[in-house]
Image 1 (cartoon, rainbow, N blue to C red):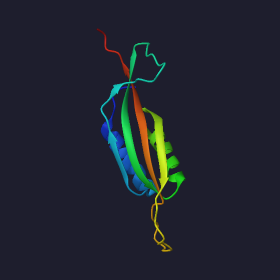
Image 2 (image 1 turned 90 degrees about the vertical axis):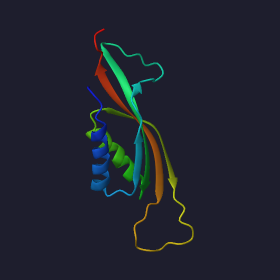
Image 3 (image 1 turned 45 degrees about the vertical axis):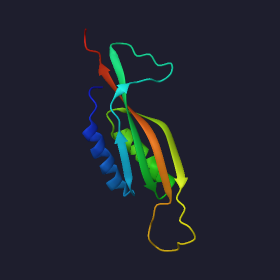
Image 4 (image 1 turned 60 degrees about the vertical axis):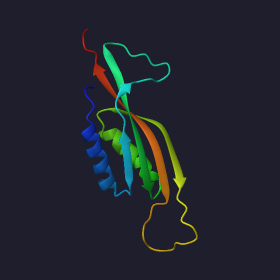
Length: 122
């Protein structure tokens, strides 16, 4: 409930990246728009708005993505709805065999950050 806190999202994503020791994460947060899910009709004196968030991540394994999404949902004051995630293996060619950890997967995800606002009286 209440206003969207965009700076909190930036801080949260940065904190998760550092705590989980994740590879590169880039993201964009679009402006809020009324929620437009099929069959959804708001009511009860509230408005539902959503900001679309696009995230690009490099991962060591799939669990990094699942932990990131779980952490993001737990720390959020908004409801997090996943629209889609595409995970692809990073082709390393025929080289390799070193001891350095390097990302093996690339994830591209789209989420909606849904916020509930009280309707203002007319």
